[in-house]
Length: 166
Image 1 (cartoon, rainbow, N blue to C red):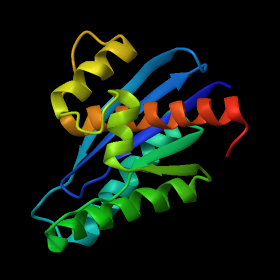
Image 2 (image 1 turned 120 degrees about the horizontal axis):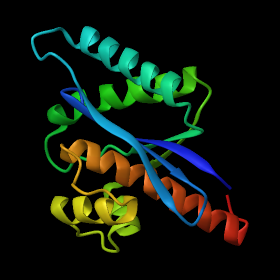
Image 3 (image 1 turned 60 degrees about the horizontal axis):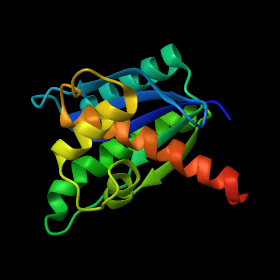
Image 4 (image 1 turned 90 degrees about the horizontal axis):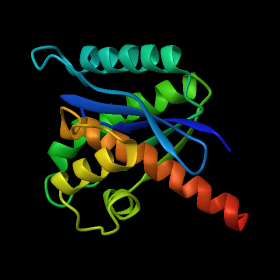
């Protein structure tokens, strides 16, 4: 099956996004970027900015589905709250556009793209370049992670199609 997937690495300060097309065998980079919000604004306005920007990306590129990184925090719950809020805005925006959403843990994304859950940011960037035929890594780790999420979605769908699982 042919896919156009929007991958998202959510964050309140910066949300990475990346679009990948795939025919099941080959992946093609469509576009990527980072949405930055103004730290001087109240959270609700920052979330509104994120919603509007994500909505514009979805309207412009018409993805079939959205892949998002699951929230992971080990120690500091208060630092996870803004990420959780941003994730909520992204999920709501996808739902408002009628898009299917799949979520993946950071380890699942690393395993899918690099082959090991202990991969670092530079390894992810290099594999994104290789898998998508890019001449340089995306300008932010957030955008690279978002492209990795989109690729993970596509890999999971290919496995599901092969084995009839879903």
